[in-house]
Length: 291
Image 1 (cartoon, one colour):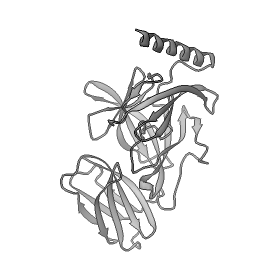
Image 2: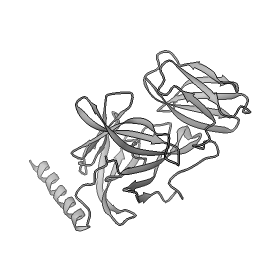
Image 3: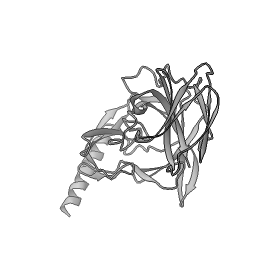
Image 4: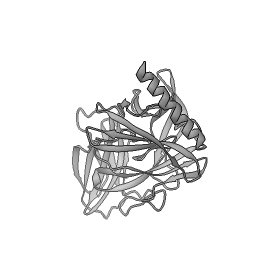
């Protein structure tokens, strides 16, 4: 009873503070009027930015989700279905497009001292404190501060905007193979957050330009094989690596400039993988879904 009264007292104080500051009681994360951009540095060997949006509905296990789309094209074309997301009572649940399972991605109903298990991980997060931040358009929104004791890692969530690691990376501490950061958040075509470390809302690197891919991989999603077609036939010999979401190499191929059909490793678990094209000092990365 005492703990419940303390939680209620904290909730009333927190709600009152944010109302006094002019903020709404709650900013939902899941909506079709939003656009995010995220920086990815896959395995610390080559980076790029991606855009994310939620658009369209899908019904899975009796629950309605928004479909999650991503693209690395700065012209916002060539969208790729990444997964599905839903929000209920301040909790945000996410699932990959190749699965009907879901996991907790955010819990905006949590209070300081609460223990959370995020992104399907067995390692806990602790909600340290809740403050507020002013968005670029003057909105005052709650900001949630979390710690991962196991990995001595911190994370921040802006209500309605998501994690400082990127909107799909809530609970990212402890994962390897990427070093993501949220770059920008736009709502109703209004820029409301921009990471001060980035000049623009996207990053084009010398090794991976969205409109000039150095190779093409299909089918995607894949089952037993992939076809690799180099875009630059003058590249000569090149190396292709396939890594799982934690950065573990699961397959390596040495290829020539001609298109090649490659068999995927036996017993490969369905999921999201990263394929790295390595030619001399040039490295670029693409996502591959195995079903």
